[in-house]
Image (cartoon, rainbow, N blue to C red; front, side, top):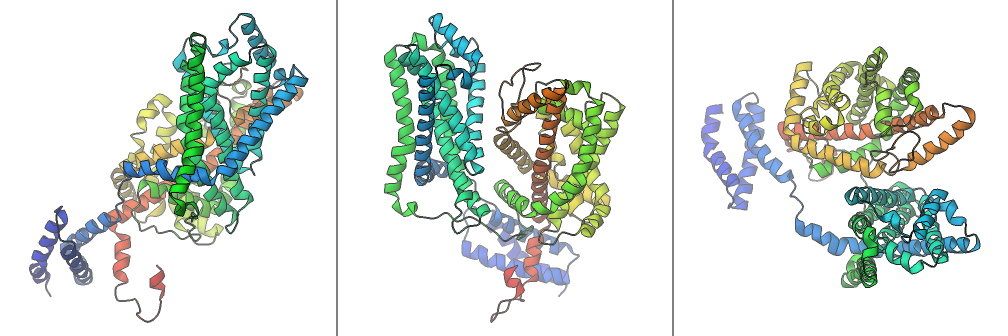
Length: 639
């Protein structure tokens, strides 16, 4: 049949389909029948008019519906409310034994602090330090025992306290992964300190005064620490007691359960910071009845949300109580790249691919990339030896500047910065190759052949992105965040597609533009995840106020670096160099761990846009027409 006859014969049907699809009120059955006819017409056109306009037109019609079918409906506010009304209380009820255990353990640790202070009145100096105890004694002598909570800048106090409380709570949760030992250590420290602190005031005849002042905010703050410990024990128990799952699968499920509890604590941690900054700071001006009322109401809210309401929900929905959550444990390497993904799907699938491909890109990065990084860092430490003898306001910012050389203090910095662009390209290449060969065995020959044909393109594609991220000052980088998505998928185009250099570049720009909103959301989500997961260890809020001062918001790396510094003082006068070198090592580990996750999100974003534009998956589906057997399963049935 001639193309003109084919068009004339079917154009009314196609026109009818377009009108029905665009109309809000349509007949689903008629639309379905027309769609089936159009897919048949498209299959015919692909066979006989493959290079003609009619094939493109029919492909766009079919793709429009295909995209609409795969477009996910946004989460409704009603569903969010349901999570807080049913899902979250149910998780709290399921974890009730762990939460109760955390409470009992914390009380025992607090009693240890009380008994130890009773036996040795100087014990508070061990856990709180001589400076804090001497300051408190002076405040008691001045008639204002809780003067430490008073400040002229209450907003700054609110930010600092809330940030610190958030750090303590999340750190208490995350260290539960290590067989719950870390959670017990932090509970022991905080419990003993609380018991010693309260008995210290009891010894001065100020127990009620201190209780009414401290527990105005302490009801929420201490409760949050205990509940975070219970969430950490819940997560850690998944590793200790996997049941019928593998330990990794069990840890995934228990971590998800613990994270739900942690997310519920955020409002209470913020409320505790607000009360401590704006209410406890003015405790002397409040009548005692109002203090008692605030404390009782605060504890009442905690008991209602974490004890009584979960019991009520469990009794109201008994069918949900024994419903076992089943994880989405896909087979290793089982990824569908011909799929249009939402932002949530990109994030979840990125973590899954990170886990399954971890061994591949880590072998490359450990044996090739890491040694190059260590050589460059040692050269830079020698180059900036005098600058490494001090601490900096933002340790991570200063150390990364020295390591990568983008401070450009001398000629070597320029050379090293150029070398780092090669390092980042190797990092990106290892991940792109792992994604492209997902499901295949690792071979060095495969990787080096890939590197030979893709290295220059990946380096060129990511050069603009690296320049923006590394060279712009942080206050401009915040604004440039809205510029980064325009280049987000260019490197993926060079690493994952075929064609000439120009074709790959144009495709990368096109897909980046189309994916702009999703890329921006991905960047924000990745930043949030990075802050939440790494802040307790070392990240943005690790700040020093000056030379040799304690950090304003200390984290785990600050504590360990302080230990390294004290050990190094025994052997050398340049002890800060060793402390900063240890920090650099941790930052390198973070870099090697985080960058692959970012690259995987780029990869899945690229594949999503490719499917939306070129419909690879739809074309594969057409190729299966007529190839399925009615009497036995074939390979096509499992694609």
